[in-house]
Length: 207
Ligand code: MLT
Image (cartoon, rainbow, N blue to C red; front, top):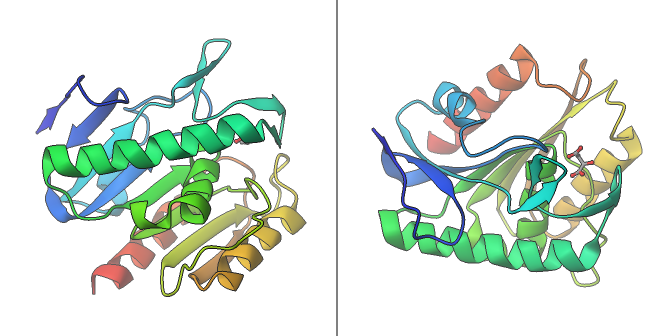
């Protein structure tokens, strides 16, 4: 069953299911609230899905925060959008009666999920970061003790240098998160292997 509640701060899609362990779906540049629903349903069947639309427009493309160039972020905007997204998660949890979600983010959505972990760690129970990069270098690392994080990078990703993804894993690990970082034979786009590994990792959390 899907329904939409336009009164929350972000336009979003909600797919009902197990509300104790929901997924927060965060689309890439040019996506919208419907984009990752099939992925969420595939990797965690029967789980409630909360899927906001990014509030920034770049031309006709939705994003979660502004950038000055490819991979160069507007840090003030990122900070404000991260706070607003964390507030939306709290609103969504109240509105639908949800437990803390695990984020499932792709590209721009994975980058704001990483920013959420660093700025508002209470918003997330964990995160799957698909093709993520360092959103910003934190001055003070938060306490992410025990938070599970899966990072799946592409060995041939033309947007994210391997060193950048490694640095993200290092920052999150340094903050205490339980990070699994795997580099797949892939580019920036998702592959079947992303689905397989994400499904197995989420099952591991549930088990
Ligand atoms: C970003 O802007 O978040 C990254 O460059 C990924 C992208 O959305 O292209």
